Image (cartoon, rainbow, N blue to C red; front, side, top):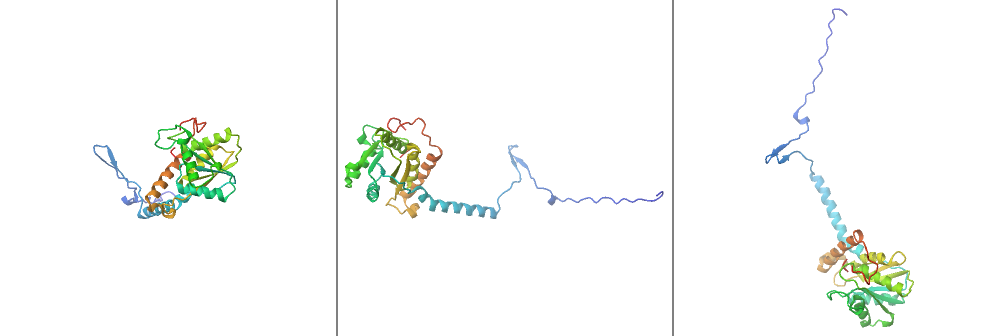
Length: 259
């Protein structure tokens, strides 16, 4: 309408305070080499959650790592194998195992004795030492068969399994499964490497013999327990993730992880 006055309300301007702006503080120092700026950090609640998770992980490791490594899982077989390097208590346990089940033959495995400079003959091997200890405990020599390896230094457990496979092949012995006797926390790695060496055609069972020098439930209280559990944990991770038997066709001819 002519002559009318139209008043337009001025738009309200939002008042922005410093508190409403994101605080990004940047400050240079040391001639511009470093910057100081705002960053996200954990609150006390965040640190509390992380602390609880760490405590839970440590508790699980302490309680669960020994039974994980020292596994016993037998398979149905009449062939028993003993790693020749084991101590007398494991030798006696192997004899008890043989007498308590329907085994027909006991094999000992292992390569050159540590500290002898390498292979010289079959009687200078852990397989021979294990056989001698079995005989000393009164076990019948007619039931013992050595399957020595010529490999020293690296990959000894795997090479011992290869030498056992070679013995089966050379003597035309058909084997569908074996049970291996070894010492406590070494057992899971032994089963893994023997299975790799023997192949899928032979099932590998494992029997872990506890070390009488310390209580497995409280292994962290003993120097032997700490040394064995930590050492075998590292060795098992290596064998599981990084071990690759490249170029190893036999446990008798190819030089090749520690016991």
